[in-house]
Image (cartoon, rainbow, N blue to C red; front, top):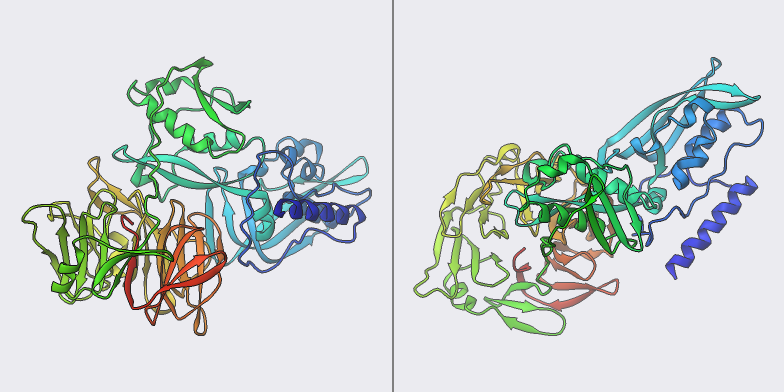
Length: 559
């Protein structure tokens, strides 16, 4: 139904352009949009801008050219019609995409030059990296005109396109290119944005070969040797088989690393609806590479655990079961927060005097205090079984302990001078999200967790801010591999839950009265909220349904 609706809107837009009575919107405030995900990679898209009309003015040519950035079909062939013969073949529209926020100002000068002043909220780089820009950012673009066969055409233009956010969400789609953690144990997604079209396979592999985003780079590595390029500048897809022909530099990969190299490419391309399998070639020679199982970490827990009535319980709308062995420890310690591994063998508790740990299923195991203190956030256990204890105070260090309870040296880095209010680690353990700062300077940050080759955490990488200036965020949780669930307090008693894509946009969910914490394991089906009154709600069928009361804390095991 939704697909038919989009096609209907496309037809309306096409008719509007032909009649000249209406245009694709070129300005407007940035708002949360719908989750539009084109199902097929093809050059059919939902906007069909028209080319220049006869005897168009310079202003009309410039406006038409900028509007034609909504049509990437055939490598932006419509936009190229506004360009001079010399520029047409040399213009590189994929080098950058600006996401416009608000209005734009076009100025045409008497010397056949022109400029555009455009308010922008974000930009997409040539490798598909999404970069959120500071509030009130403005981009100034310069153009020149020439007459060809009596018609004005643009003879000089920047290598970019401009779209507003609602148009961006239709034309572009988020994809993940995959890199390994430093142990080669898990694949870590790096989100990129490309127009959904036939050439997406080539752009994804190019992005993979060019390496990870700057903020993620310290925490990941690649099995593909540095300097490897596509031997043929296209990834072909024939009956679902994507053929990836690499240059001779790929031969530097050892026999043992080539299955990892192939898995990296396979996991990057298989989410495309047109790709069912991947073949790796090196200089046109097919490679006999043994497949390895997917190293993308599975989200294994769909049932949260809550701290309620002095016990830890799995709870959802249909059932409630105890976490075995937890109740005696909770009766011994006055706990207000916890963390639990997905096998439910390792438990962390926050009490009034510190962070405690307990192993289950080990004869003679004791409850040990890892670190003393009163100002800790909820503890965390990463996938590598390191325990994390983060104080809220700005100048307090982050404490990390190995599986035996021994503290490891960890540098808090840029976070050292900021107060913290919540902390969450990604499912594979290579990234983290933290709410840090106070008052108007409180922000949500995403950063890499830098580890050595044995998986031991060393420090945090430099942070990035998710899209939008969200200063009223009160809670954050990873949901899946590429998204965060947050609570945006805003103004008033109602709180807005949102899903943020790491390196992408956001969407809002129905508001909740007095919400104070959110958790999730899947951005669609496994979201839960705790209120100030300690009521517990689950998101189902576009509504929040009450599950339980008297919930002091809630977490997914292993997250």
